[in-house]
Structure formats: C-alpha cells, structure tokens
Length: 288
Ligand code: AMP
Ligand code: MN
Ligand code: MN
Ligand code: MN
Figure 1 (cartoon, protein in one colour):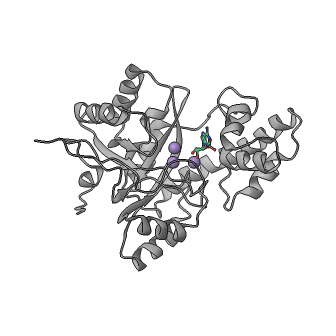
Figure 2: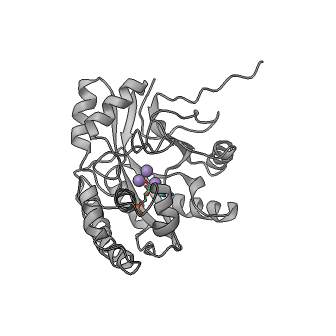
Figure 3: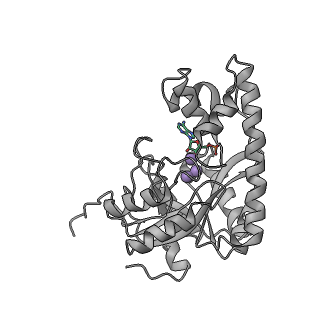
C-alpha cells in the first residue's frame, strides 16, 4: 500500500492556554479561534488554575464544540520541573482547588523572588511589571519575559529566557513545585486523567524518561503527550512506542499560547501513531 501522507492537522487538541494563565487570548476568543481552525474537541489547560473554564465552556456550547476541562500543573520529579496535564477534571473539586492554591502561592512568592534577583542585575520593579502584564492572578516567567521586552531589556521572549529567566540564569528560581505524586492525586481526586505534558521538552535521558513514566504510572498517571505542537523529528514515534510498551494512553496537544507566541498553532498536530490508545477512549469518550 502506498504510504499515506500525514497532514499536520488534528480536529482534537488537548493542550492550550488562555489569559487565565500565560496565553494571550480570552477563553472565549481561544475557543472561537479553535473552531475557526477546524478543531472540534479542545481542552483548555491553563497553568495551575481553572479560572478560564466557565467562559470557555459557554463559548464551546454556543459553537457546538466539545470542551474538555483541563489544567496544567507545575510539578517536580527529582529536581526536574515537569508539567502534568489533568484532563476531564471537575473544577469544583475541593482537593484539586486547595492544591492549586498552594501552587499559586508558590508562584506569588517566586515572582517576588525573581523581582529581587532582577533588581540585583540592575532591573528594578520587575515583579510589579510582570503582575501588570498578567490578566489574571497567575504570574509566570512568560509575563516577566513580556515585561523585559516591553522595557527594552530584551529583544524578544526567547532572549529573556536565554539571558535572565531560563534554568541557570540570574533570575531563575529553582523549581520548588509540587511533587509529581501529589499533582497526580489531585487530578484523580477531581475525576480526571493525568497526562505527562510534552515529554520531549525535559532535559532527561531515555532511561530517565522511562523511569519518570514508570513512577508516574505507578502513582496513577494515565498517559503522556505523544504528539505535541513543536516537537523534534522522531519524537512522536519514539513516544508512541513508549506509550505502547508501558501500556499508557496517548494524548495530543499544541500547547498554543497565542497568535504571536511562536510556532505552535491550534490543531497543527500529527495524529497519534497507530496502536496508541487515545486518552479520550480511556475516559470513555467516543469522539468521532
Ligand atoms: P513558568 O511556569 O512561570 O515557569 O513559565 C513557564 C512558561 O514559560 C512555559 O509554559 C512557556 O509558556 C514559557 N516558556 C518557557 N521557556 C520559554 C522560552 N525559551 N521562550 C519563550 N517562552 C518560554
Ligand atoms: Mn506557558
Ligand atoms: Mn508546559
Ligand atoms: Mn502548556
């Protein structure tokens, strides 16, 4: 049989951000843009909070789209910052919300600490500047990056990460996030499925990634993102093989942050490789 051309488009996109974290669109505008792109099933997965979900849900209902309620929790495993996406969560769940409040409190402290570190580099008032760049209580490095660019200290956000905000830079605060097992437990308590986000983006060897996934699965982790927005060649196939071998489900998501935020576009994704169990089937969702 002739090999099939694989188009980098998926009508299902289970990882994106709105103004409720470090995206640049309102939840309603994000849903509308996803609809316009041809996406029919989407998850909103803002960092460490679920404040955008109600607005996204209303917008999705109006457009006859399916919104899967999600969150992306900042977590840590053996000093390595990792992100865990929770899908199909109940945002009303108290255990989840108390947990997210702890992460947000660390974010607040970290923003002040980053402000102090930047002041030590001769850049004053950065924490306040970053808070002003944010449209919600969630302040992150992206907001610092935008402020550093606006103030003329950096040429673009990538430059801000390379010079100030990235791991090992002067304003980098070690990731004292929530240990992986706790993040998984909160997601499960909220009825959700825990998915390791963009596994190719961590500085982990193949052996370390396998160890992480094995522990993650033992804690109740359900799957991993096999197809991501900006992915190195071969990553999808490699992660697909890992998912099958470890009998974990596969998810896919663009990690879209906004129209002017780099290369990731909504739905610009290759499909899951053959034989990988889609995460929505784990959730009992029949998506056409
Ligand atoms: P935080 O969760 O506050 O530590 O910020 C992490 C966020 O920063 C990620 O979710 C991305 O949106 C963004 N980010 C990380 N690395 C870079 C980079 N090199 N250039 C631009 N944005 C980045
Ligand atoms: Mn982000
Ligand atoms: Mn992430
Ligand atoms: Mn993300």
